[in-house]
Image 1 (cartoon, rainbow, N blue to C red):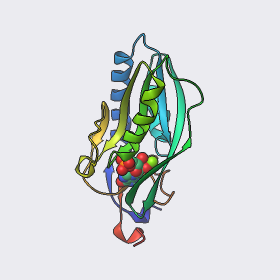
Image 2: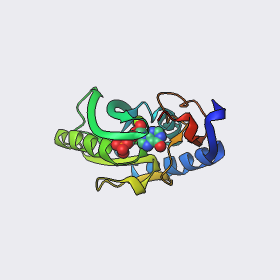
Image 3: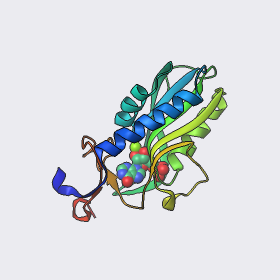
Image 4: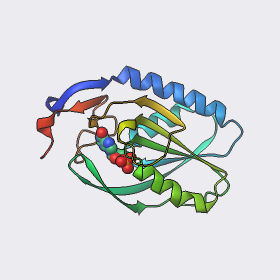
Length: 179
Ligand code: IMP
Ligand code: MG
C-alpha cells in the first residue's frame, strides 16, 4: 500500500494538532447551541471520529452518503444521494464535516438539499481544501489545510476505495492511478 505513496503531504502529528485546534474553535463557537455534526461518508469518517473527540461541548452526529461518479481521479459533476439523515434538522445548528473540498459540487448539492429543511444554521468544516479546482462559489467555514492540486489519499481519503487506512495524507504515485 505505502509503495503507491509518492510523498507524505500531511503527517499524523500535523493532522492531530490541526484537529485539536478545529475542535477547540468549534467548541467555542457553538457553546450553548444545539450542534449536529453531519459527516459525509465515507471519506470523512476518520476525521469525524477524531474531530468529535476534540469537541468538548454537547453534540450529536448523523451521516449522509453522496455518490459523485468518478472516472479515475476526476469528478464527473453528477451527484446522487445514497443515504439521508435520520431525523428532521430544524432544531439544530448543522456543521457538515467533509474530507476534502475540491470542485465544490458535492458540498453545494448537500447545502441545497439541507437548506429547505430549515435548520438553525448550516456551516462547513473540511479537513482539506483544493481551491484551484473550484467550480462553484462554496467556501468552507472551517478548514484544516489548503493543499495544491494533487490527488491525495489516506486519513479517510481513497483512490478506488483503497488507502483510507493510511494514518497520514499522502500524494498518490501517478503509476498507481489507472489511466
Ligand atoms: P467535489 O464535489 O469535487 O468537491 O469532490 C468532493 C469529493 O471528491 C470528496 O468528498 C472526495 O470524496 C473526492 N475527492 C476530491 N479530491 C480528492 C482527492 O484528492 N483524493 C481523494 N478523494 C478526493
Ligand atoms: Mg468522499
